[in-house]
Picture 1 (spheres, rainbow, N blue to C red):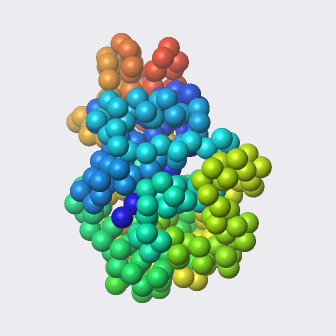
Picture 2 (spheres, rainbow, N blue to C red):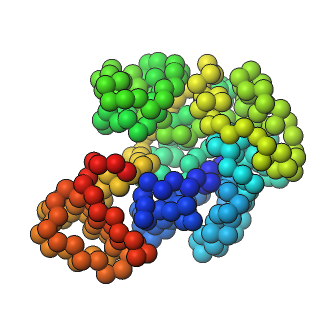
Length: 327
C-alpha cells in the first residue's frame, strides 16, 4: 500500500493561527505534533514511511522537511507542485510518483488523504482503511463517508445505496448545500459527509480518468518529470469535479473513527476539553468571567467578560468575534 498526503492548501479560516505562510496542516492543534505529522503517523501501522508521499506547494517544501526531520520521518517522500492546481492534478502527480519512484505495482492500493484533519482513535481508522482495501479488490474507487451529526453546510455529501451495511455504492456526490437541503440530507439517513479520503489502484484510476477526464488521463500516462514541466499550464480542478461526480464505479465505506476537518474555530471548539463554564483554553491565557468561549493565546493573553466568543492571539495579531459569526 502507498499513501499520498495532500498538503498544498493555504487555507486561512483559522487566521491568525493559520496564514498563507504557515497554513493549518502545520499547526499543532490536537497535541504537540502538527496535523501533518499526525496524518503521517496515522498510517505507520499500515505501511512504511518510505511508502508515504507528501504532495505540497513548492513554497512549503522547507517547512514540510523541517516537520519530517523533527519527527524522525526522514524516509517520507516530498513532491512539490510548481503551481497550485487543486486536488486532481496533485493526485495525478503523486500517483505517478508512486509508480515511477517508489515502484508501486499498478494494482496496488493507493490511499489519498488530506493533511489537516483530526481522526481518532487510530485503531478505528485502520479498520476503515481495511474496508477501503476490500472495495479496491473489487476494482472500484473507495472513499470514506462520515455519518453526519448535524445539517452542516460546509461539507460536501455522498448519497449511499444501502448505507446501513457499512460499505455501499456511492450513488451521488453532492456539493456543499444550503441549510434546507442539508437538513433534508441528514434527515433522510442516506447521506454521508464527504471526508475527501480516497483509495484506488493505478489501473482503476487510469480507466476512470480515460472515461471521465481525458486531459488527466493523458497526464497520468506521462512520467513525473514531464508532469512537473507541464504543471503550470494545467487546468486547476478538484478530484470531485474531475471524477467523483461523474463516476459510477465508486463505493463508500463508513468512517468508523471520529473525524473533523477543523474547517473553522467552531469545529475546533467542539473538539476541545472545556472547563465547568464551557471555556476551551489553549496556550498562555489569563481569563476572568468568561463563559462558553474558545480562548487561544500564543503569548500572555488577558481576556475578561466574554461569553459565546472566540478570542485568539497569535504573533501579535488578535481575533475576537461571536461564535457562529463567520470563519
